[in-house]
Image (cartoon, rainbow, N blue to C red):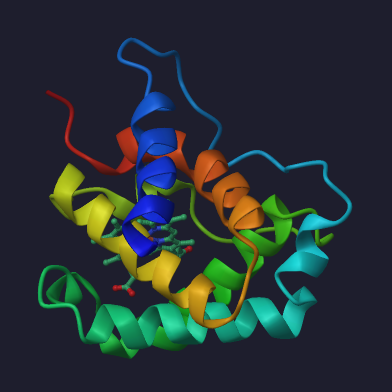
Length: 151
Ligand code: HEM
């Protein structure tokens, strides 16, 4: 069952990465779906998802060395703020744009996919409905090319 569920999310990601796209917005656009934020459990639910995301990242040898533990509280707070904004929760993201935040990190597509997998696990654990998960992943997908080196 799990593999059946993971495929559409990754399919959405690859479909949403334009090859010759113009510039994408500094962060993902707001999804105007009134129910979506509630499906994540509101602000408290989103905080739990991000906490679990970083538990998964810390245990993930594919990508855990990218992250600086001294920046952890700030990074978590910025992710909550950004996802809250994207999910229509009424927050205003105050962090760096995605190009600046990930400049010079050398993130590859496989690293991006690993993080998405860790996020999916965190959303599953918190019982976020799959349709809601896929909406967030589809909104985040265009950020992929802002984080990975240009060919
Ligand atoms: C759609 C996917 C992603 C989103 C929405 C995202 C979002 C963010 C945000 C909001 C920040 C904080 C910016 C600030 O300080 O103002 C950040 C920082 C950072 N991100 Fe990402 N990111 C994504 C993917 C990735 C990936 C794939 C990696 C590496 C595997 C990564 C590694 C980092 C690192 C290393 C930082 C610097 C802070 C730290 O070390 O904790 N990000 N990201």
